[in-house]
Amino acid sequence: AERRSPKPQVGGSIPSWPASERQGVRVTGVIMADKIKLVLAVLVLAGAVGAFYYFGNESVLLRVFGILAGLAVATAIVYQTAEGRRAWSFLGDSRTEIRKVVWPTGKETNQTTLLVIAMVIVVAILLWLLDMLLLWLVRMLTVSGG
Image (tube, rainbow, N blue to C red; front, side, top):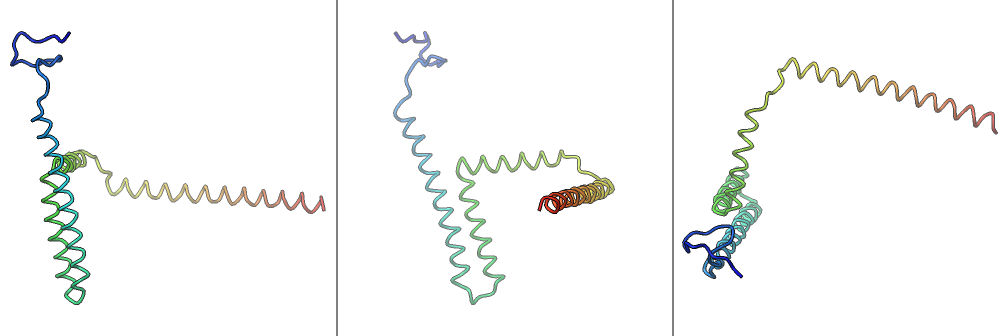
């Protein structure tokens, strides 16, 4: 048996009324509209790239501006979708986090770089010595065994 709230206008963890068909159509319509917008954005971008090659005799600068304009229009179209707004929000959050990073000073960067180079040289010498030792051992075994 389904339990209903004494107040029909109040929803809860046990819904007092089932979802209407109208809500399902609205959600499906929004998703379809977003898909259409994404396809349109891809077509705009593809058209800009096609125009870049079609007008190959024109100035490269003008053709690059054409691609950038196509990219701007495609980005504006994508931003109108839920996914586009979510991506834009993510980029904003990423920018905020990058500002919080404590970057090393130039002196610290140089010291770390020199330490890495020194360690690479030390490990290279150790590997070279190990290679020479193994070569010597193989020669000893093959000369005395043959």
